[in-house]
Length: 137
Image (cartoon, rainbow, N blue to C red; front, side, top):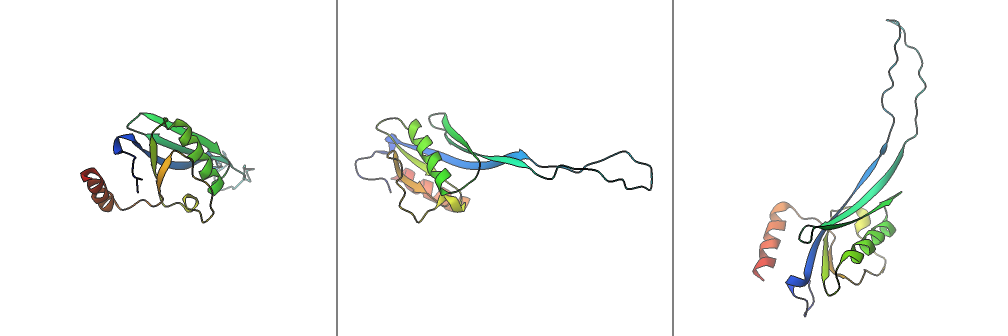
């Protein structure tokens, strides 16, 4: 997957994931006399954002964005943000999970710093076998 002329010592492995954060109403409680059920007004709407983050453990650096939703366009933005942190002359491999917005049928350009993009996380056994094969290369 790494093109000829790119050496493994010039490749950085990045791990990316995203998480929804925010506030959602919880159970409302009120003091009342035993045996009564008073009505309570409760906040029904909720607000949230998504944090997309990526780290390169080898270099000890990371990149992140905050977005109002998750989709392919937002995924493109985090890839562009990661590419800003990839040093000149180096390449990045980004390991992702199986979220639907990680894969696109469109022909959006991948930022120049990326050589390959792992779009499916494998089982830990397959991942270890793959790592051992790559190390032996």
